[in-house]
Image (cartoon, rainbow, N blue to C red; front, side):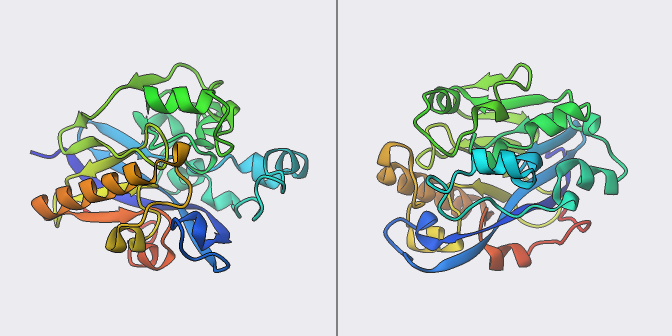
Length: 264
């Protein structure tokens, strides 16, 4: 029996960029507005965060923004992030604190998914931070410009994982590499309605799923591996009558419960 009670989608920032970043070989020259999502999952055994968004200070302090979002590398600049979109702000609106989070499950170590770890730690979060060994190895290689090393290496001990596992009853880590070396999606069995597969960046857009198109940027150009992961998620969803939630699709996001509403 699933221990899951509720799930809240959290809009942590928005980013305007060329669509080809999300769809390999498709959409060049077309600008899209992409949500950057995290999810708060309440279970009978504690609270889980799936991703934590960006580092607010790196976006909103001019010197830091110029350093981290160098236009030579980040041609479309930094995301847009308001104070209300910081994870501690969302928690406060629910009457919670960072210390009330038990597990932070990081899908991958790109800046828009792991950047909020430092602020959570500074706000008193002592949660376990789950991340894959393959993801750490690739991020520490320095070959992925979307990984800001200080987002994760200075945030206390990480709980290093390898492969798929159950976090708690009804919440399961699903391996979905390709976009990054150790990318993980998350299976969530809700008390009402169909289960949900949080795709993370295995599928930025619904288009990635519908047309089986890899994300535009993949670790060491492993686009075929990314498509294999998309097919895997679709197979799981079909066999279990689950929904797949892409991570950067604005139209799809607008169909989700808008905070403070939730899905159960």
